[in-house]
Image 1 (cartoon, rainbow, N blue to C red):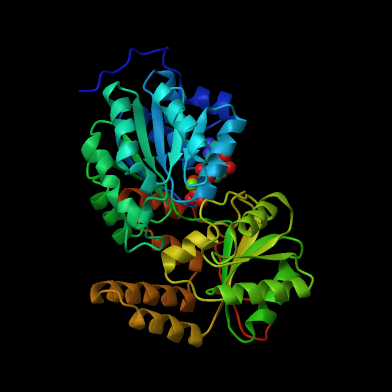
Image 2: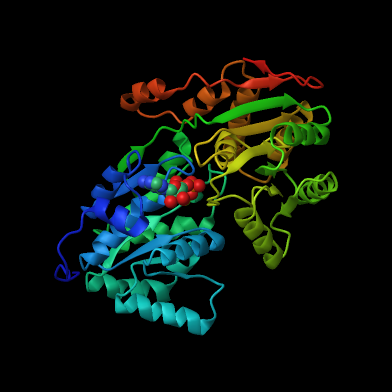
Length: 433
Ligand SMILES: Nc1ncnc2c1ncn2[C@@H]1O[C@H](COP(=O)(O)OP(=O)(O)OP(=O)(O)O)[C@@H](O)[C@H]1O
Ligand SMILES: [Mg+2]
């Protein structure tokens, strides 16, 4: 049985931590409730849109519980760049955090492990494959036995779902956390909230008893537009030059080759464009991401390898030159625009060839029939969105159906600006629908 340590200090109000450590005056939306729930030792599943502030939902409880002598919070994160960003940001505000991943040399990893076992660390970020190693589990066992394992946060929890768009096999083994450390509160967080993915997260992470917090997925400052593909490159260039000259943006393409070609072409047209995909070497990817984050007005041309956890507030547009795979992917990708709440555009060029291409990829994939059926249904839902004559933002939000109790609130928040536009090929004028 774990022996809880005596409470080291008097309880600190979460709002005080928010103010003193992070410099923010108030919690947003459900943050305060989630934080309290976790500090009280309960499990939570948090579904919140991109950029809404999921990180604070576990960082504030981690600090509160550490101050109360309850030890370290372990954060599961799927991407090295994400861990680095978060630990860097925590470091800047004076919170003792570290990460364990394959970028660390053996002696650096040992130093982090020492920090971990000493109880000094407030948050430890680690990749799922690291967490489920016998060596790491043995360290967690020791912490747990002395009551110094304060909570588990599973970020980007949709990675556990095969229905999701970022499936990571290593996430499947994370149910060990519940089996081995029952009683340590867990919080799973994602911006993907369709019914299948949500049910999968609950089942696979054994979160049946967790309270589910669903925020409104509406992003009223994003204007969604779909244009019929004619000459997609020229259409993209016109869109950037006419509406977003000098702005930071992301252009998504399906293949690495198309990313390279499009970035080179845009650069030739005088746009500050950089390529990003998994085929580029690590150093170049890091450099391009760094420039996108730090400099003004960079257009990142990328495959979906780029974006998860990118916290750049002033991305003014996200453009798709190819059809995304499904609505969840589209929502996540376009959700990277306008995190500062200012107007932003989600723009997509879409043609019949894209549909034929996607269907062929599904048909020819070696996946099981059941999986292919689900993929086809998801593609159909996306096509319905592209073809709709209703407001796309409203339809997109509806794809993340919240429970009945929260519907009224969402409807009331819809702004009159929720208009989508369909631009006909060759026509500069936009038709409001
Ligand atoms: N209560 C708050 N007050 C002010 N700013 C906040 C608050 N909560 C979060 N933020 C800021 O909002 C930004 C986005 O937060 P965060 O990275 O946690 O989003 P997220 O929900 O995890 O998004 P994603 O799904 O893309 O990972 C951050 O810069 C964060 O500092
Ligand atoms: Mg996040």
